[in-house]
Image 1: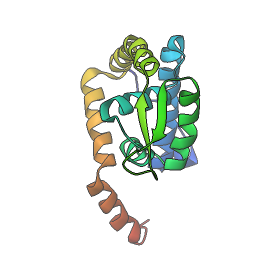
Image 2: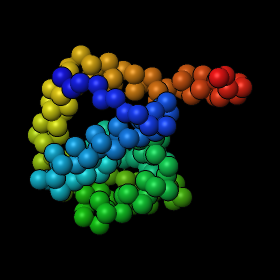
Image 3: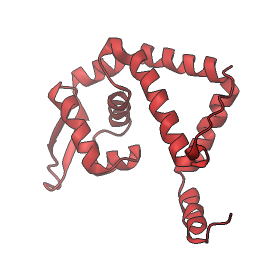
Length: 161
């Protein structure tokens, strides 16, 4: 189990900064674990979400990944270029594009599976299995509409000292 690290910084009370820093660090660790298959964590997450919801479109995919659709479109370019996804005009609504995994995309996702499982096991070993599950539950709460509503209400109140 990893011991708590004390940080004496002015932004130590900022939850957003702490979450962003932790996310970047964990992404670096997962990127290193996935490096042998040539995917970044973000790319693997996108491919996995497409597999769960294909066919999909940029808007639905962005919502599922909690990403800005413009940023997602930018992130899709290299995985489309590498032949892992196909983006085609939706025959039912030509304003939208359908995104699907190609056979190469399915193969790349399968190739990454063992590496991802090892990264998950490494996280659980370092952080603790029970703590990892509790963290995922807390993160799901942060993604909820109830949390966003409570946050907005709290942000509307004058700050207390």
